[in-house]
Length: 207
Image (cartoon, rainbow, N blue to C red; front, top):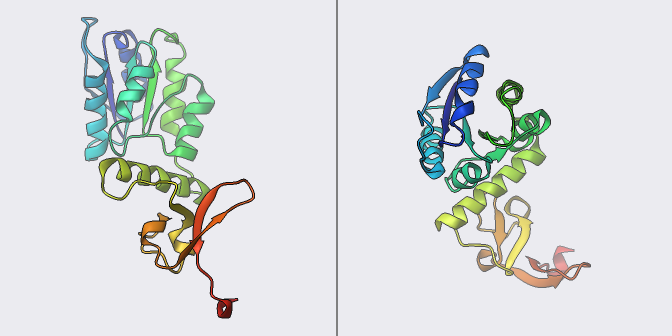
């Protein structure tokens, strides 16, 4: 697979280690900078890798900054990006298997060079499980992105938690949450935890 790799100046000391490990694993690294320890801004590195992922020109990405935090925060502002700091092999592997992680972020001032090959190998060696519970959660993440982009109405307290596939009165897209505002037959209810939501109205002859 093609793997985009980028860093800011703080992450630069470990970038070459990442590139070498990607090659050693039989993948093609795409070096998106930076090329020295001259100060640069981590959002620019995050943008470069995020755009490579979003465009489909690369399959996964690795981002490095001082702590890994800034690069992760910036990358996750981009639609379709699922970035996370993983400084242990369990997280690097499970992040892909459960959350379809597509960008690994590392803190060059937190971990040493010896750990980099193990983390990159765990990340690139894992595949998304595709299990329904994980796919459902990813659909909800996609829904959050769509709401933030203004593509669909944002959830409010008036949003029904019933999946549209389970609500015969829903006009929501398949796989999305039913919005009370577009549920043609609904009634407000309070569940046993005191949470207020809407459910489809049931006529006596439906029972």
